[in-house]
Each structure stands twice: as structure tokens, then as C-alpha cells.
Length: 494
Image 1 (spheres, rainbow, N blue to C red):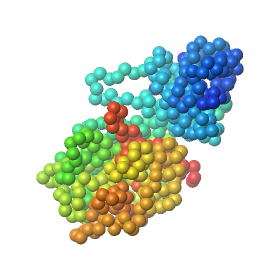
Image 2: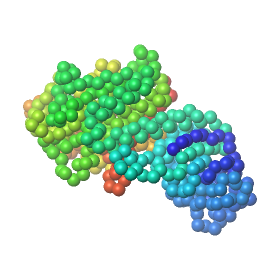
Image 3: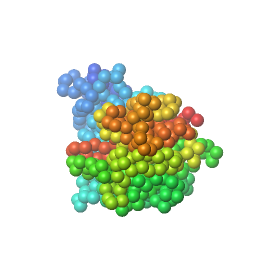
Image 4: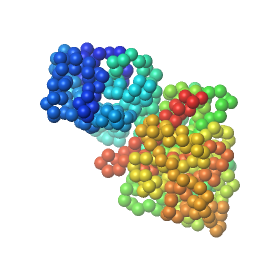
């Protein structure tokens, strides 16, 4: 799909296969729709008067050969209650239009929906529209002998009647869309392809493409030398070698403290010796979604050439049962020197992340955000719509919450204090790797917090939002929208 921006155009005179116009639930026409109605001697109002289409959310109505309108098609899309119109409303309307038009016999569309947000939000509207359109038109055919037939539609124009320079917003939105696609492609790839080595290769491709990016890959021998016994306790059970993948992007002065994104990259999670049930175990290929999302966000940051220094760390390993695998009751020593009693080998994500978080200290970061499909308890608490947020820094937590609201990629902050830390006590080591069934998301974050005391840190538990099950099974690419919005906000605040 190709995308472009059209500014200062009259919808009735555009040469395109279809124009998309919004109508609110009380039959109020959007600004662009009013112009078309005036040009067509009231054709839109006459259509609304019939009563079949009322402008309710998630509805649409196609008009053909409207008088004095150059486009042969006019698609009216319901926007819902005007007083409650939000970014989410825009996304719903855009998705409705895209799902209708991708099945139509046309090649080019001009949509005026972005104009329904206030002018100060146009850039956000453009980015949102591109992410929504990207979701509708995304396909993953890499492993099908007969790929799905692509729609005829290949050009989508984001249009508005006012004059506004939207090229920067368009390019930023496309970079975020490509980052989201990268995260989804990695998540959807099978575990026999997307191994720790494969993730390192993808990082190498990114580094090779940009002079501002440098790659370091820590092999298992390097991690052993660094004392990453916690990471190695997971990796050693697999024939696939673990990797600590570190990308550096320098978009600001060398003296500027970087932000660090850390991703859990368990490319397949059997649970280890504490093996998971067979049902739906295939979905454990998505246990590297944290890694995929930080790599996608990092790529978007580089493509947008943001004036930031960013470090990305992926802790990549397979969690497999074997004669070399860790056993419940084993005690390991992390890079920090703290010892951990492994009570459950299926709580492996925190074991690889804690060494990555300790490694992050050497960059003297301004902030660290780790992203992980860490706990099923987060799905129980927040469902499949909202990521869990836990942090040792109120300002950083507020930044991420705000970015989530803007990006329609929401988070909800959970508590994290000494009362929960008590659950991690061990009779034999400094801490246990689980804290029991109560408050599992919180105690997992409490575990990680013990390795983040030297910098502002936040943890995103994306277990409920990283992929969809059932008929729509596949990666969502979240939280790429949230992370990229957070990076953009930090640039704006600088």
C-alpha cells in the first residue's frame, strides 16, 4: 500500500476512485461532507433523510455518481457521537472504511477523516490513521505456498480541506507502521525460524542499514565471563545458543544520557522442566514479543532520525527441557551478584531480564523501560486491552501512561511496594524467582526492581496485548505505538 498526504483540496473535485467522508450520529455532516453536500445540491442530506444511514459508529453507506462530484464513489462513514469523538473514534471510522474498500474494485482512495480531530492533533491523527490502515492491510504470507491475493486498492491518500504541512507526520507515521510490521513479522514467525540467532541477524541488518547504529552481540561465553548466571540458567537447556543483543543509536550528542529499551526475547517457551500444558503451547512462539516490540520501536526511532540516544537490549534465549536445563530448587548467581532460588523454571523471563537490566547500568541511562510477556496474571487482571505498568519512578510512569493515552495503546499502573517484596523471600538464596499465585504480575515486577535501583525504570507487562488467539491469531505489534509515542514526547519535552 502506498500512502500520501493531500492538503487544501476540495473533496468534490478530487480525481480519485472514492472519497471517504464522516457523518456524526445526529446526522451532522463533517466539514468535508458539508462541502460535498453543497456542491451536489444537497445529495448527502437527501440520502440521510431516507433514514437507512444515521452516522452511528461502525456503520457506512456507499453513494455512486453523486451530482457534481468527480469521484464515482462517495463512502459515508459513521463517526458516532460528536461530543465524544476521540482518537479511538477516528481509528474505528478508518478501520470501517478500510475494511469496506479493500474488497471493492478500485485502486485509489482519498479519506478526509483525519480532519475530524482538532488542528493541533493533526500529526497524531495521521500517525493513528497509518497504524490503523497498516493493521487492516497487514498480511503474513511468508510460509504459505499460495499467498493471499492482494486487494486492488494500492493508494490511500490522507486528505483535508485545510492547508496543512503534513509530510513530516506522514513520514513519522510510516516509520512507526514499518516498526509495527517488523514486530508482527517477528512474532508471527515460527519458533524453528525465529531463534535467538535470527533476532541477532535482524539486528545486524538494521545496523548495516544505518550509520548511526552500532551492534554488539554478547555470546554465551561473553555472558559467562560477565557472570550472567541467571540468564545462562535459562539458555543452557536449549541447543539454540542464547544471545544478548545490544543496539546503539546516536541521534544526540555523545554526552547525552540514553534511554534504554529492554525486551524479553524468549523465542520459544516450553516452561522448561516446569513444563507447560500442550494446549495452545504453539502460542509460546510469541514469548519474544517484548523483544520484537523494542526492535520495531528502535527501527522507527532510527528512521525518524529522532534527536535522542537510544540503546536497545534484547535478552534472547529458548526455554527448553533437557538434561542440561535448570531444575526447581536450583540456585544461580545473577550478574549483580544477587542469588536466586529457581522455584519454577517457567518464570524464566525475569531470569533473563534481570541480567539485561544489570547490564543496562553501564550506559548511565536517563530511563530504562523493559517490555515483556511476563505473567498470565496480567491477563487475569487487565484482560487483552491494557498493558500492565509498574515503575520505581512516578514521573516516568506518568510519561508512559500519557503516551499510551495518546497512542491508543493503553497501560494501567499497578502498585509495587515492600509488602509484595516479602513474597519473594527464600530460605536458601537472596530471593526466589516467584512469589506465589497472589499478585503474580506485581511480584514479578518486584523481582525485576531489585536490579534497577540505580536508574529510573518502568516495566510493561504485555502478556495480554501482544497477540490475539482464535480465528484472528497473530501478533499485534504492541506496544510499538506506545513506545514510539513516548520517544516522540521526550523529544518534544527536551
